[in-house]
Length: 377
Image (cartoon, rainbow, N blue to C red; front, side):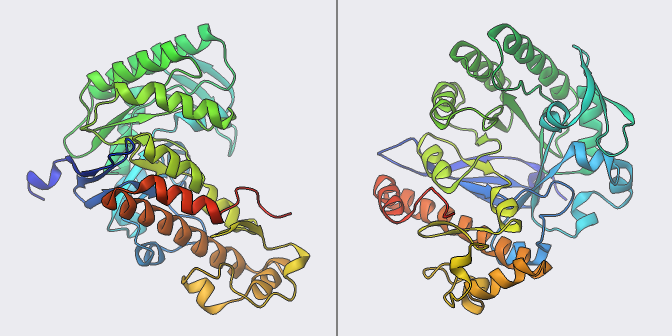
């Protein structure tokens, strides 16, 4: 691999005159990522219910892994011996690993948070572990993703201003320590925190941006706050995250969220919704979400989405997929997940085309004219 292929650069190829949306290309050693982009979540070295070949067929060029989960199982040393996560799972596209900060603060019991790092107990067997910024960077370097996230503290919602300020300060200090260990083989993204407080959000965004990393992220959103508050947080942070770097809104979101946050200047998204909902019988359609387990679909021999041409919709009916769920068949989760991810790709492609044509507001209006945010019951 030559030095040029190791460069992580971002170029903006088009802008919306109506909003802050833009088209871009983020160059990585494993390909060029066109933005806006949705990244499927492969927490434990797999996007649940999907094969890597299917993800490629769906057009995904980047997927996520999670440092916390991969560290606990199968272990970063094993992944390193396999030649890195790309080889371990046979994935030729780009990859991003979350630092595990969110999982440490949301899944672990009896933890101790200090300025040096976090002591936590594994959710698997109760064993005790320590994450420091340096340790997390060592793990992420062994895993070998193209984009790696700095270790951060994600305060719960709601939190007091004082608690959030201390957590944000720790996040900044940990970012400096992560930055000191970075290599040119991976793109380190900093994470702006700050909770639901304007002064902390702006402080954190400005701090992260000043390091001039390959990309910047907004974390600590979609953690239970109202939608309007989430949009407010993004509005506070974006002006302090320079336009020339990709902006990544972590853990977001629904199709409508993605459209709205692209309009606010966000380029990168990830969310477990399309895969998690698919496994549980909830599918996205042009006309809103449906719960396929509903009895109304017993005799419904139409596709999941009459306006979708994915493999699932071309070949199977609602009645059949409902039968699969009721029978506990694995194929149900596979067909539904494939469809949901295809739907997200359709939304992203529509967004990109609308930015290129400079009619993103009209695209949103037309999308919402059909789409209902409320799933059927």
